[in-house]
Amino acid sequence: MIGTIISWWFFVYSYGIYQEEYLNTISELQNDKEGLENKIKVLQDDYNVLNKKNQQQLSIQDITISIQNADQYKLREYSKQEIIADLKEDLSSLIAKDIKSVSKTQFLIKKTIENKIYNIDNKKYKLELKVLVIDTTLVVDVELLFSK
Image 1 (cartoon, rainbow, N blue to C red):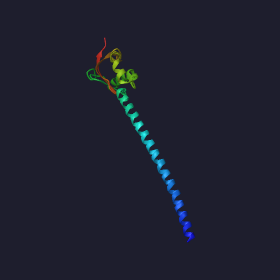
Image 2 (image 1 turned 45 degrees about the horizontal axis):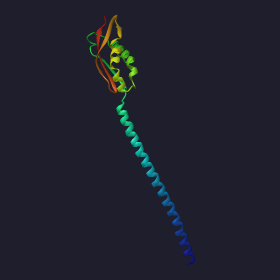
Image 3 (image 1 turned 180 degrees about the vertical axis):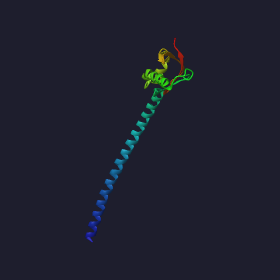
Image 4 (image 1 turned 180 degrees about the horizontal axis):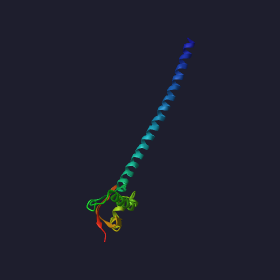
């Protein structure tokens, strides 16, 4: 009988210690959870603010150039690609610039395109800007003209 009482008290004591440790673990996990939820909320707010700023300041990521009337002058594909590559090289400094600042320099872009003379098959050509679309992709449509 005394052995039963001692074992019963031992059981109650060890079960109480186990429950206390279990409650402490649950409490710590709840505190960690609340801290992480607060951190997530702060990060989401920061993400939303940065996203709005980025939408306001998008940047040029690519340049697309097309020559509208290359067939009229019977240019070979190689010559056409050479002009496009040269023009892309001239405009490559615009990549990674924000759209707002690029749109402020439209006149300078137009002059950069139109003032250059290209020597192809002993003939001199220059470009005339027809379409300039400033977005994340800079779209440039030009026409080829004989230079004087």
